Image (cartoon, rainbow, N blue to C red):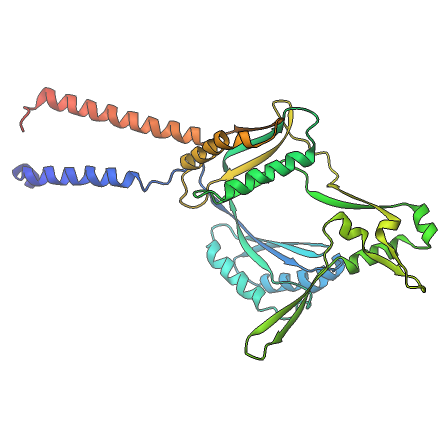
Length: 353
């Protein structure tokens, strides 16, 4: 009744609602599939030079004991491997994951009995995200090697990561790099060594170790670290296995064949029948899926000519197309509804300025 007597106020309120509606369009989150918590907390502790049983006793057991008592924790699963410990903490469904993460961090940070060689734990919540768009880096001919494909796919990943508006890019469908050491029985007999001796020499020499800290005269601390991790073939070849009485040294390169290659598995990836590597681009936080897709498409158009003949870049599984379809449908429905309302009002009401 009040609005019937005060038509100006009713019109102003309607205009205000319309204006606020248009202004809020730009704040809508544009995502194809929402990111959500998996109710899992990931803990990783690097422990250079340690065997799996040392990792289990020195790291895993202590973290398990520290987090088992928390009310939000449902299950703890740990994996002990050479040089690292991995612990997955499953939370009770429905709990506040951020609060649980803070409690787990506090418990783990309070552990002061880790081995000196163990590095600082990395603790983070696992967030499930779906990629917005993929870039297939494929070889046009069989002559393009797996190493070449991985190199150019890594280049695409790094260049996309450097672009404003893109936060997370991952390399997928490629085998992990691996340096393999092949030692024959004949070589071991020739030099009077055993396989265990070679293994021990590699493990004890190719290693990065924190060395603590020393206080500087003018205040502050200087962190010490021994950096001897072998990463290239030439580094492994120079590892000393034995020093002879005459001062000469027997090196790993004389006993073993060292190959810089890939992890041994049956993984193969093809795009349109051609070998390929995938670069996955994700949306994070308030980023727009449509904007990310446009950035990637523009990058491919402008950058493909920079790659050698035989290497092609192709977008694949662009999920932003679904978002564009939904947005266009919403706009069409809005315009249709506005036209119908305007038509009904024009038929039954007098038009006045």
